[in-house]
Image (cartoon, rainbow, N blue to C red; front, side, top):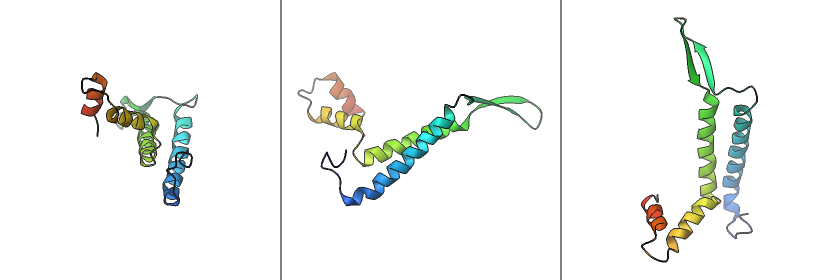
Length: 108
């Protein structure tokens, strides 16, 4: 994808490798989180004997890992949605476009 787009260079090898590792980690977490026996809530018993529920930590980890993968994709310019937003902002025909105003207001 990067070579076809003319944006690949040898210096990006480390970033590509990092993305691959982070993506594999995300996929393993995803498989674990959505396995048939996986539960969203985990019941625990406190030292006092009271039962309580908490969110399965795999879902929190999966969310954090998805953020890592998104950052990796962004660093390589492979996040198609972000490129679409940037193109829309740069190519907006008039300043009265509501979508362009919304995107400009929320731009990083």
